[in-house]
Length: 197
Image 1: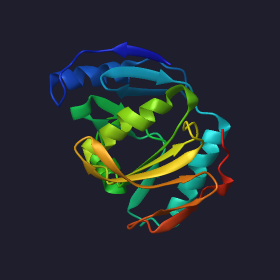
Image 2: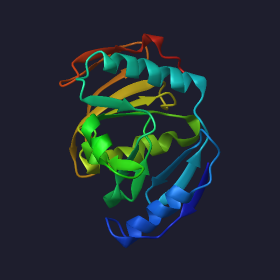
Image 3: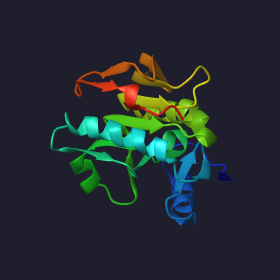
Image 4: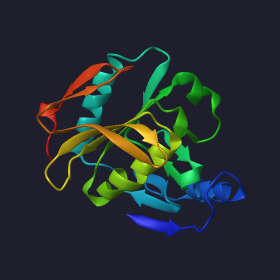
């Protein structure tokens, strides 16, 4: 992972625009993920096959309950200017009209109904800490963290009820157990098929 630090004040305005311009002009190889995390432009390699397998299984289950006017996006930039963040989550559930109406290369994270991140070894702490705080700040109602590299073993945690930069932990299970997503999703994820690493 590489990084470029830009010291800007939080929030919308010329500083945010400058940071986004650097992000847009970042030269990364195809498949690599370029994000802004707490004012730092980061470049991460493509995820491994197990990571992609888990994301696909979650996406498949979500499609079974989503209304037609919501989409699941794998490479959708989600901006949180107040946290100097522009993330590319593994999955973002966002109303279709938001994606079609927005111009540019990202949407406001506040429009997401659910964000899913699957950790990679090289940047798991970003998903656990910085991104969780960013999604909470944006008011994303549900954040699902599939943590393949949790210190006590692989877990899946559902966060909700965001207040400021903090989520409440709604439910945590180890890989192999089931996790229920509340309304408007109303489905159960069976994590028994998730590969541990």
